[in-house]
Structures are given as structure tokens and as C-alpha cells.
Image (tube, rainbow, N blue to C red; front, side, top):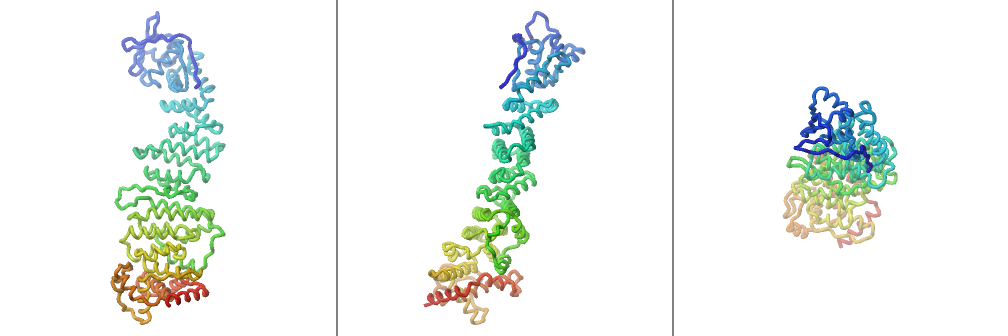
Length: 581
């Protein structure tokens, strides 16, 4: 730390009965009150250096200085300078001395070699050339912000620090993190405008600053914190990956806590969406703060917005699997169109820029996030569907994670009706379930019957095409399909419900399973097909308001879902014959 010494006389100031004075053979002739402190001094040395005291003493020998910057301490140092007593100037006391000297008008116009000129020389030649001295001085300007702005002390410190950042080494980020937001913001604006410091370095500095000032929000949340957060967001570099996605999502969590502006949250969501593939599940667990009793534990809407932003900014790679027209039509028609415009989303995917690997990672991330929130009983099924369908189909090579989401959600929301359960299960592609997941789904009482039949159908088809063992159908499924086949053969629509199972109930009790297994007869792939088509017709009738009209689109969807090649169909039939024998 640099310092400057002025004067050579020893310090002769003393205190007597709460009055500060100076030892001298000459009697004091001026009384000065500085706030609550009293001084008995001499006119000649003081008035020869201070233009303000000259003016005040012309009216009265008793002077009252109530608003002098720096208070009594700064005044006494200035008075000692007038007496020629030795004083020391450093970055620690420069600002109060400079402001007090300006207040007292101790300029060269009053006396050559006055205090203001000497302080300015020290400031320009010593303080501004040293990083830490400049930081200390800038921090001191908070004592008299307006006067420091007028004297350009603050501006010159900001200019010196911003110019020194590219050449600074070591812990400059942590040192700058001690500055107040106003000073820090001005320095970083100057740094970014110069364009010399890489965006990555700017991002690291902002992360250090946020860690310094936004860590105590759990115990204290104030308007100051909200303004500070919005300032930090405004300083984020425009370059992608200048800060990590995890840091952006931490800022978004803080924005929720602090009730930041909508523009701030939108900016953070846009930035996080651009590099979502870097995020973890914990990063996406953004708490939702509301006074309502029906709100979710986490802010699912924010995550949906982030994922959609990623899809808008991404581009489906040319190597993605191609899909037939019938499959695309079937898949789109089976999805829920509530709350999300998927047609616009599909168009945006074609013109986006994310790599195939990024899409795969984000789809996996979405599935893991859904598994975390599926147990929240206040999460609406529409939001689960919207988030699951936000990822493109090709990005999921398997649907085991989605199956776990569906299973967890159904168990946490037993109040869902048949229509809602079917709608939720349409996010599953049974062809992409592993053998283990298929085995679990086949025995899952929470799933709609149509899903169980689909799982079994594709398991039989998979086994037939690979020449593997064809798994025996569970007894309850055999019984239900046999009953459906008998009803179809008789052309009757008045078949009674299965023993032990209430009408319209898709969940089986143990007693019902036993009775159904006893009535099991032969089951063929055509029976599975018939049941799928029958249930598909029911779905179309529900969507059409129950008028019973079978549309051409539903037929196309069924054919796209159930069709398998002819050779595999013959192999499958042989295995069914073996099972029957």
C-alpha cells in the first residue's frame, strides 16, 4: 500500500475538558464546532489555507461546520496540514481527506501548494497505478458518493480497474466481489465494452460475485437482493457457454425466491435452454414459491419452458431415424394436444441446431426429472404429458424411464379416471420397453388394460422375430381376451363382466385372477389384435363424444401400431401353435 507524508512539525494537538486545541505561545482566537466536537485554534494558519473559513470568519469568530465530509477526523487532519504538522495520506483515508479539503476550499487558488493539489497528485501517480489501492479507494467512495462523483474519484477508479483487469492475475475476481453492486456493475460494463477479456472469464467473475452476495438469501430476502440478481443477469455475456447451465439454473431458482421480474426469468430460461444438455436433475429442481395450497413442490412450468427453448434452438440431425407416414400420423393423433402446440414445435425442430447427442442427453434428463416429480400429488397430468412429449421421438432409444414415470404417477394419483390414465399412457411406446420393463408392465394393475395388451403383443412379436422363447400370457389376460373373443364370435354385446371384476374396472383382484385363469382357453395373435382394435375403437368413441362412429384415422392408427412383417407373422403363428399344444 502506497502512502504520502506531508509536513514536518510534531503533533501538538491535545484535549482539555472535551475541547481540542494546539500547544502554542499564542492564544487561540477562533472557535470551531464540527458536529459534536469543539476546537479552539488560530485564525492565521487556518484562513491562509481555507477559502471557506475565510468567508465564515468574516461574519463571526465562532464557526459551525455541521456537514463537512469525513467529520471531525477529516477536519483535524486538514487543520494539522495548515499548521505544518506531519500527516500521512493513504488509500484508507484519501477519500475523506480529499472531500474535506474540497469542502474547505483548500485549493491552489487560495494558497500555492495547497492540500487539494497534493492529494490529486498522490491519487493520480500512486493510487490509480496499483490494483489493491484503487479497490480500497473505490470502496471508500461510499462514504460521500455524490461528492466523489463530482470530483470524478469514482469514475477514475472504475476506469483504472477495468483497464487493469486483462493484466491482473491471481484472485482479482474474489477481490472485486467485495465491491458494491453499483461499482461492480460499472466496472464489468467497461470490461465488456472494451472486448479484451474473454466472455468465459467475465462469466467466472460474475459467478464469484453471485456466490459472495446471494448466499444468505435463505435467512434474509430483501429488495436489495432482487435488484442485485437482476443486475447480474444483465451482465451475463451473450456468448453461449460463457457460464455453465448449472449457474444459470441457480440464478433462476434465486429469481423465483426473490420474485424477480418476468423479463429476468425469461432471459435465464432462454439461456439455460440453449445449453440444457449440460444440466443435471438437481439443477432442474426449481422450487415453486406461492401462498396457494394447491401449488406443486417444484416449478414444472419453468422446466417446460426451458425444454421447449432447447427444442426451438436445436436442430434435428440428418442421421435421425426416418419414420413412415402412418407411424407419424398414428403417434401424433395419440398424443394429447392440450396446452402445447406440437405442430409448431415439430416445425421448429427441423430448423434448429442441437446435435443428435444433445437431444439424447436432454431426453434422458427430462425422463429423470419426470421421475422426481411424478410422486408429487399436485402435479397435473397435462404437465407431465406436455414435458414428456417435448422431446422428439428419436431422442429416446428406450422407454423404461418413461414407464417408471407412468407407474409412479399412477400410484401417486389413484383418483385419475380411465380417460386420464389412457391419455398419460400414450406417452409410452411399448416397442421400446426392455424385457424387464415389459415383464413388470404385464403384471402392473395400475396400467390400463390396453397398455398391458400392447406390451404382451410386442413381447410376443419380439420373441418370434428373434427366435426366442414365447412367454406364456398371464392367466388374467388370457381370460379377458378369451371372453372378448367369445363375445365377438357370438356377435353379442351383452356378455356379462368377468367374475369378481366390477364393470369398467381394469384392475384385477386376486380372486378375479384365479377365476379367470380357470376359464382360460386358447389365445391367438388375432385375439390380441382384436382386443387392441376394440379398445382403439373405444378411444375414438370417447374422443368423438360417444357417438360410436369409427373414423378412418383410427383405423390407420391401429394398423400402424399393430402391423408386423408377413414372415415374422408366420413365425409368431407357429409359436402360438406350440403354446396351444
